Length: 117
Image 1: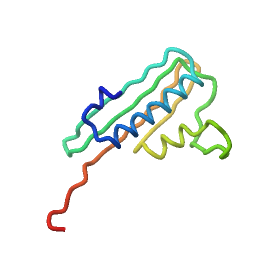
Image 2: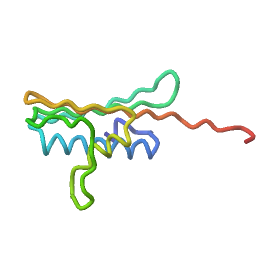
Image 3: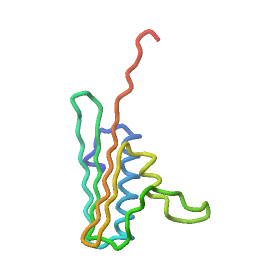
Image 4: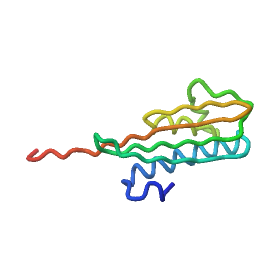
């Protein structure tokens, strides 16, 4: 992922790494092989950067949650989708016995500096 996002601002790279880690961990723990992580980087004509992260696996029997919910404070796991929901501009999760797919998009627009402000 770092190679695909080389030259990206530190905060965008950190968010992408965290999201990728959370999605891959969920696929590893809850899904089945094969696990595939894809990172796509685009520079829209309007400027900025869009990063799409997709993780697929061979499937799982658990249904995708309708919305992420934070676990109890003492619980050691279960925060992955809450993190993805808070950092990503858009995301989706589809699960099934023949394959699961988690996808998200990070959109970064550079801040415009105000001259003479």
